[in-house]
Amino acid sequence: QAELNIITDLMRNDLTKINLSPARVVHRRYPLHVPGLVHQFSVVETDLAKNNTLKDIILSIFPGGSITGAPKKNVMKLIKEIEKYSRGFYCGSTIFLYQHLKTASINIRSAEIDFLQDEIMYGSGGGITLGSEARAEYDEVLAKLKSFLLLLS
Image 1 (cartoon, rainbow, N blue to C red):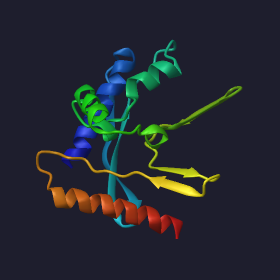
Image 2 (cartoon, rainbow, N blue to C red):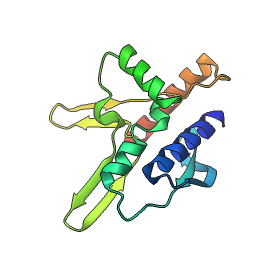
Image 3 (cartoon, helix red, strand yellow):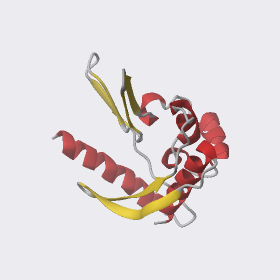
Protein backbone atom coordinates (compact mmCIF):
# COMPACT_ATOMS: atom_id res chain seq x y z
CA GLN A 1 0.00 0.00 0.00
CA ALA A 2 2.83 2.38 0.85
CA GLU A 3 4.48 1.81 -2.53
CA LEU A 4 1.23 2.50 -4.42
CA ASN A 5 0.52 5.62 -2.35
CA ILE A 6 4.00 7.00 -3.13
CA ILE A 7 3.63 6.32 -6.86
CA THR A 8 0.12 7.80 -6.91
CA ASP A 9 1.38 10.95 -5.22
CA LEU A 10 4.32 11.18 -7.65
CA MET A 11 1.92 10.98 -10.61
CA ARG A 12 -0.39 13.57 -9.06
CA ASN A 13 2.61 15.88 -8.64
CA ASP A 14 3.88 15.20 -12.20
CA LEU A 15 0.47 15.84 -13.76
CA THR A 16 0.07 19.05 -11.76
CA LYS A 17 3.34 20.31 -13.32
CA ILE A 18 1.89 20.20 -16.84
CA ASN A 19 0.03 23.48 -16.47
CA LEU A 20 -0.16 23.99 -12.69
CA SER A 21 -3.74 22.74 -12.58
CA PRO A 22 -4.07 20.50 -9.50
CA ALA A 23 -4.30 16.81 -10.42
CA ARG A 24 -6.93 14.66 -8.73
CA VAL A 25 -6.87 11.06 -7.61
CA VAL A 26 -10.06 9.70 -9.19
CA HIS A 27 -9.72 6.05 -8.11
CA ARG A 28 -7.31 4.79 -5.48
CA ARG A 29 -6.13 1.18 -5.18
CA TYR A 30 -8.03 -0.47 -8.01
CA PRO A 31 -7.18 -4.17 -8.43
CA LEU A 32 -5.84 -5.47 -11.73
CA HIS A 33 -6.04 -9.24 -12.09
CA VAL A 34 -2.65 -10.50 -13.25
CA PRO A 35 -1.80 -14.23 -13.07
CA GLY A 36 0.12 -14.94 -9.87
CA LEU A 37 0.25 -11.33 -8.64
CA VAL A 38 -1.70 -8.86 -6.59
CA HIS A 39 -1.45 -5.73 -8.72
CA GLN A 40 -3.16 -2.47 -7.90
CA PHE A 41 -3.25 0.91 -9.54
CA SER A 42 -4.74 4.34 -9.06
CA VAL A 43 -6.26 6.69 -11.62
CA VAL A 44 -5.03 10.28 -11.52
CA GLU A 45 -6.28 13.03 -13.83
CA THR A 46 -5.78 16.71 -14.52
CA ASP A 47 -7.28 19.30 -16.83
CA LEU A 48 -5.25 20.31 -19.86
CA ALA A 49 -5.13 23.78 -21.34
CA LYS A 50 -5.70 24.08 -25.10
CA ASN A 51 -2.08 25.15 -25.58
CA ASN A 52 -0.57 22.05 -23.91
CA THR A 53 1.53 19.99 -26.28
CA LEU A 54 2.47 16.32 -26.23
CA LYS A 55 6.00 17.49 -25.42
CA ASP A 56 4.71 19.32 -22.31
CA ILE A 57 3.00 16.16 -21.13
CA ILE A 58 5.94 13.84 -21.78
CA LEU A 59 8.44 16.16 -20.08
CA SER A 60 6.15 16.36 -17.05
CA ILE A 61 5.46 12.68 -16.50
CA PHE A 62 8.63 10.89 -17.61
CA PRO A 63 10.35 8.96 -16.31
CA GLY A 64 7.48 7.37 -14.40
CA GLY A 65 7.45 7.42 -10.62
CA SER A 66 7.17 3.65 -10.44
CA ILE A 67 10.59 3.49 -12.10
CA THR A 68 12.33 6.28 -10.23
CA GLY A 69 10.86 6.34 -6.76
CA ALA A 70 11.06 9.47 -4.66
CA PRO A 71 12.42 12.05 -4.50
CA LYS A 72 12.48 11.71 -8.28
CA LYS A 73 15.37 14.03 -9.21
CA ASN A 74 17.70 12.62 -6.55
CA VAL A 75 16.86 9.02 -7.39
CA MET A 76 17.40 9.65 -11.12
CA LYS A 77 20.86 11.00 -10.29
CA LEU A 78 21.65 7.92 -8.19
CA ILE A 79 20.37 5.53 -10.89
CA LYS A 80 22.63 7.21 -13.45
CA GLU A 81 25.63 6.86 -11.12
CA ILE A 82 24.96 3.27 -10.05
CA GLU A 83 23.63 1.54 -13.17
CA LYS A 84 26.17 0.92 -15.90
CA TYR A 85 23.61 0.62 -18.73
CA SER A 86 20.77 2.60 -20.20
CA ARG A 87 17.28 1.41 -19.34
CA GLY A 88 16.33 2.32 -22.91
CA PHE A 89 13.06 1.09 -24.40
CA TYR A 90 12.30 -0.99 -21.30
CA CYS A 91 11.13 2.13 -19.53
CA GLY A 92 9.44 3.73 -22.52
CA SER A 93 5.89 4.05 -23.79
CA THR A 94 4.16 3.89 -27.11
CA ILE A 95 2.97 7.11 -28.72
CA PHE A 96 1.35 6.85 -32.14
CA LEU A 97 0.89 9.99 -34.23
CA TYR A 98 -0.41 9.56 -37.75
CA GLN A 99 -2.34 12.21 -39.64
CA HIS A 100 -5.31 13.03 -37.39
CA LEU A 101 -4.92 9.93 -35.22
CA LYS A 102 -3.18 10.63 -31.94
CA THR A 103 -3.08 7.93 -29.30
CA ALA A 104 -0.69 6.77 -26.63
CA SER A 105 -0.10 3.97 -24.21
CA ILE A 106 1.57 5.81 -21.36
CA ASN A 107 2.73 2.88 -19.29
CA ILE A 108 6.03 1.38 -18.34
CA ARG A 109 7.17 -1.25 -20.78
CA SER A 110 8.71 -4.29 -19.12
CA ALA A 111 9.74 -6.40 -22.11
CA GLU A 112 11.63 -5.78 -25.31
CA ILE A 113 11.50 -8.34 -28.10
CA ASP A 114 14.16 -8.41 -30.81
CA PHE A 115 12.72 -10.58 -33.55
CA LEU A 116 15.89 -10.31 -35.67
CA GLN A 117 18.05 -11.75 -32.88
CA ASP A 118 15.35 -14.08 -31.45
CA GLU A 119 15.83 -12.47 -28.04
CA ILE A 120 13.54 -11.14 -25.37
CA MET A 121 14.63 -8.92 -22.51
CA TYR A 122 12.32 -8.66 -19.51
CA GLY A 123 12.92 -6.08 -16.82
CA SER A 124 11.33 -6.22 -13.40
CA GLY A 125 11.81 -4.56 -10.07
CA GLY A 126 10.09 -3.71 -6.85
CA GLY A 127 9.39 -0.61 -4.87
CA ILE A 128 11.39 -0.13 -1.70
CA THR A 129 9.86 1.70 1.24
CA LEU A 130 11.02 2.10 4.84
CA GLY A 131 8.86 -0.90 5.74
CA SER A 132 10.23 -3.15 2.97
CA GLU A 133 11.88 -6.47 3.64
CA ALA A 134 14.65 -7.40 1.19
CA ARG A 135 13.51 -11.04 0.77
CA ALA A 136 9.89 -10.01 0.14
CA GLU A 137 11.01 -7.50 -2.53
CA TYR A 138 13.14 -10.17 -4.23
CA ASP A 139 10.21 -12.62 -4.09
CA GLU A 140 8.03 -9.94 -5.73
CA VAL A 141 10.48 -9.63 -8.63
CA LEU A 142 10.42 -13.42 -9.09
CA ALA A 143 6.59 -13.44 -8.96
CA LYS A 144 6.49 -10.78 -11.69
CA LEU A 145 8.83 -12.85 -13.85
CA LYS A 146 6.77 -16.00 -13.29
CA SER A 147 3.56 -14.13 -14.20
CA PHE A 148 5.15 -12.80 -17.39
CA LEU A 149 6.36 -16.28 -18.38
CA LEU A 150 2.83 -17.67 -17.80
CA LEU A 151 1.58 -15.28 -20.49
CA LEU A 152 4.11 -16.70 -22.96
CA SER A 153 3.32 -20.37 -22.30
